Amino acid sequence: MHAFAYKDGALCCEGVKLANIAEAVGTPTFVYSKKTILDDVAELQEALAPLGAHVAYAVKACSNKAILNMMAKMGVGFDIVSGGELWRVINAGGNPTLCTYAGVAKTEPEIRYALEHGIYCINCESENELREINRIAGEMGIKAPVAVRVNPHVDAHTHKYITTGTNENKFGVDITRIEELYATIAAEMPNLHIKGLQMHIGSQLTEVEPFVKAIQKVSPIAAKFKELYHIEFWSIGGGIGIVYDGCLASGQPEWWAARPEQITIRSYAEAIIPLLKPLGLKILIEPGRRIVGNAAVLLTRCVYEKKGEAKTFKMIDAGMNDIIRPALYEGYHEIWPVAEHKGDTITADIVGPICESGDFQAQNREIADVKPGELLAEMSAGAYGFSMASTYNSRPLAAEVLVDGDKWHIIRHRQTLEQMVQGECLPE
Ligand SMILES: *Cc1c(COP(=O)(O)O)cnc(C)c1O
Image 1: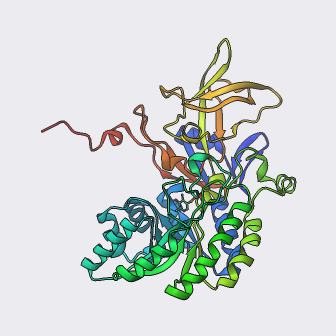
Image 2 (image 1 turned 60 degrees about the vertical axis):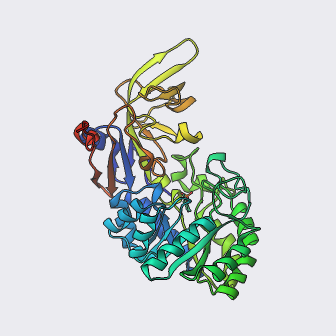
Image 3 (image 1 turned 180 degrees about the horizontal axis):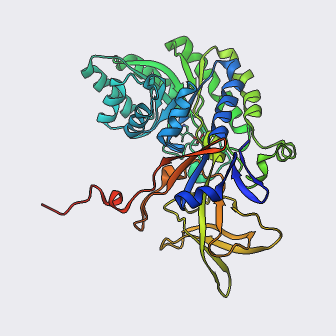
């Protein structure tokens, strides 16, 4: 449950009026609720306690230092996908020995950096990569901890750009080849320590069923690897979905009661615990979106409106450079006025300032008939929001704010124009 709601006509995050933040730091600004994040982490930890499961937060969903630091203090580990993310985790006070390292194209400097810092495990995606890590570990005179990502070929029923667990994706090693590959590691790669097994079937899964299917399919292999190679852990990946359509209402318990099919941390845990417990392996989960997705909004301001022949457009000061999800994979975000409206709605496209037709946040959407100058909140913007932002069209990166009860703190200053061009230079 998140902490965004109208109070006396003003949209608030916890005890803070969003309008006050906009006045102080301007727009566009990402506003995160500390309580929402900490509650969700605690709920996951508690729900999976019967498995002794460990949460490895997927840093790429939202990698602000203040947010990583909050999680590190709760004993959370981190699932990283680059040397840069590992650097961020260490810089934010996280523990590299609780980190797993995923990704299909890790480079030699990244692999060395992770091994030097005692990474918990490198989750590999190809035989080539394993051989490279074996070579590097040999040079370093160590045994590198590795797991392989198995692709269970299960349909995650999610958008095609964020499904990862079928044999048409670039990720992982096909389930039909995984046993042969582990045998090859054991026989031919003496500098690797086979530490576990990993999978991740996709993102934004709104039902429990694909998780159950994948676990059932891979369980016999995990059990076999425990026997043969004494693996210590099985990471079952991330992917738990959040509410986008219905986000504001989902802050209330009644919303959930009316939708028993929507995945919750509880229904996820209840479905997977009986399947995993008998294996006696340490279970890792790698949630990203589920922890931060509903925990933030993007505060933006309506700049102009235009009534065309066919459509009405509301132009806002946030663009696809600030949040690319609608353009990249048809991501849906609710958009609410910060000052509550009563009744007056209009069907409009909410579009940004970027010179691209793909720069929209909503199309043909029934929303409050906001006027230029009014503030809007784009909901569920915490995951794959700021972390995917760019300066396209030379728009400095947005500010980020963390709300804690009735206080708020800047956790990233808005980028200045000078900072935006830092690093650029004329040829000698
Ligand atoms: C992106 C990713 C995750 C997190 O996915 P969410 O849908 O945000 O939970 C977990 N594991 C791996 C390997 C990933 O690439």
